[in-house]
Image (cartoon, rainbow, N blue to C red):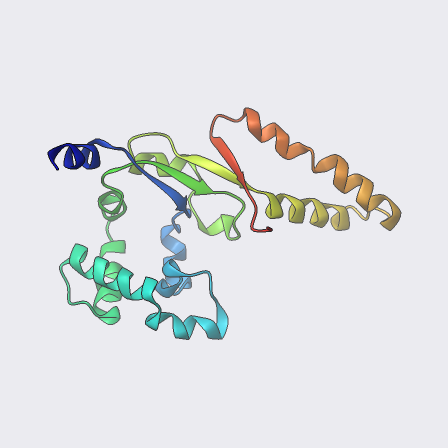
Length: 179
């Protein structure tokens, strides 16, 4: 059992599904409930009863030393967010490296990959989200008024560009939600 405990305490922790943190000025624009789900709109109201949210409240209340209610945890987090990076640094204690999911919406409201390096022991890494690359190429085609008969050819040519990410030392993988 001692060997197992030793392995647990010496194995680096890697957060393999991290999302970039919101900039201070964007914190109040988003409901805290979204930390446990990608749901939005009317669906967000149902989130409080899902297991991931219940677990998040329990863990957060223990971490913050507050009662295990959503209201208490939310109030405590809002107070902590008014402080400097100390709160974020505390939340990331013990994590060696973040594997940040790239290509998410809201880039203007979140800190970039390099900013997150201050929170963990090693430089943050990133995955390339294939659908986001495709979306940006298609949006680019419409913004440049590419004729309809050339859109597919343009898309196929530009879709080869993600291969360039292979040479970026911060990129460690590609992700697709299409099975």
